Length: 102
Image (cartoon, rainbow, N blue to C red; front, side, top):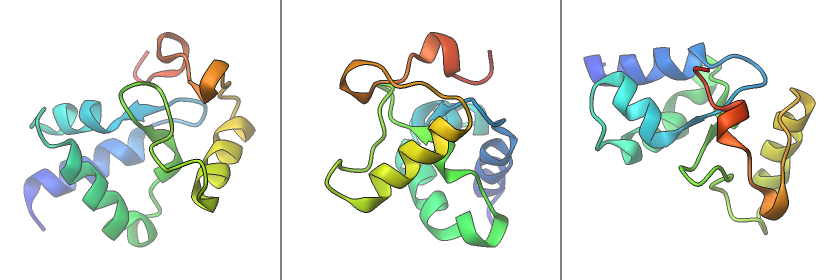
């Protein structure tokens, strides 16, 4: 496993309940602020193996990246709400309140 991939996994695993992080933020914290798509790939391939809190990773605009018409969208939203993350207008998460670290 590449060092960068391991750093992505460690960063995602560190996101606490009730907080979110963006794909780009995780990439930057892992050492490459231009690798948000790599974060997505790691989530798809490593979530089960490493039991990553995939639902805590969202888009830069403070929204769930899964299209609303897919079941994964509601699943992710429900998991976040169960942890206390609140959604505002347009299902947007207030990053000033819920973004990790912070």
